[in-house]
Image 1: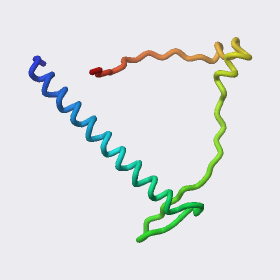
Image 2: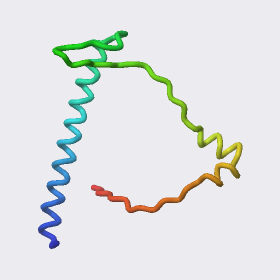
Image 3: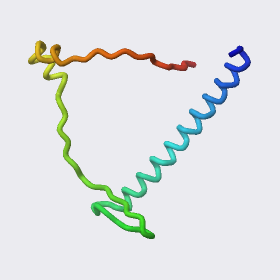
Image 4: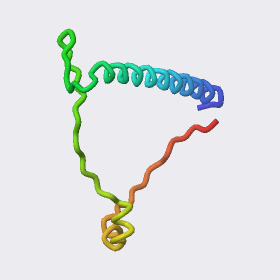
Length: 90
């Protein structure tokens, strides 16, 4: 790949990132409005489409506490992974 190709793909990358950010913002705004319409209701059906906003409870391991209070157990269950990070900085 030559420098011109890289510049072209970088421009595509940058424009696509901007478009995605705008779409995510638009999606978040629509979601917020739907949540506002739902209020305390957990479910509503509009034109055959169900919209649900239901509470849930999740349990997660407190790794910071485990590391602090039981470092040997924490260390025994660590799993090392390797990869490559793709990053474009301006």
